[in-house]
Length: 341
Image (cartoon, rainbow, N blue to C red; front, side, top):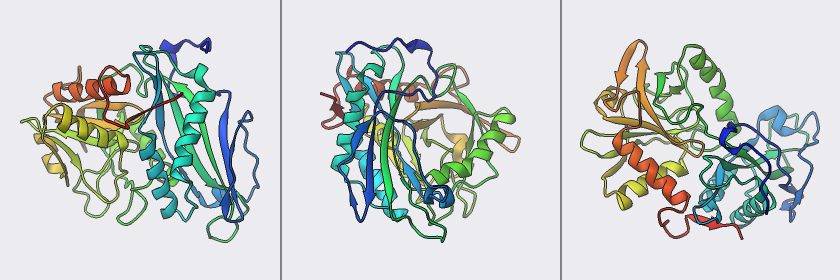
């Protein structure tokens, strides 16, 4: 299929309407078969549950063109599982995981002309999401829902390419203990908007959120998990019941252990020990890994030995290995890449 006439090298991380999206509706206790449609607009009641009580969940994932020309989606089964877990927590009907994967593959196939070519640095971002659509005025779950998947070609998440970020320790809390921090609900991201705007106004790229209970332990940023490297090369990620279980983080930990032979550990990470790490990165679907050069804790600067010019050597190896797997340059573990036929 002939590609769209898009300047692939210079697109940003933003929304661009593509030709098709998938829609399935839940009514009278069951999901319909769903279909690919042209219309990108949604019509709903002014009293729709999603507008009144934020009953909405979503996923983020990508499709790539590999070195040998295949179009693949990275680990969609894990996104399906995570959306199911989010639905259960938000009192929403679970969209069947096999149908989730099928819908994602259909959307990629239908928008094949928008999948950026190999080597462009761009990808096709996929956004599966679900929301309560019927009118609800009393505080309760909706009775009717829509599950949708749209796609949009995107460039790098952080403008200017991969360069170390400066982040601050936030005074705001991202998620409460026993709350919804471990699921991908829209309300979690709404809570972070003021914090990220104020961080940018003060010259920081992102926020480091601490645990709301004691404010002594590292949790995550508004949209990515932390990954640290010790001075002896061990990979450490924070463990908490209010951290979103990142698929990228999970994949990086596997790569570290099985491909690079590094020791890995998921545990509680205290703010006081961050100064002792050699490298720090933020990991997630959008950016894979973004290196952190400096963390500012209310005027106290924590500068990592990896510096402000480039990724640290271990972080860089992790990034190159995972992106190599995603792009087909390195053999992937079984089931990681779903080929779009």
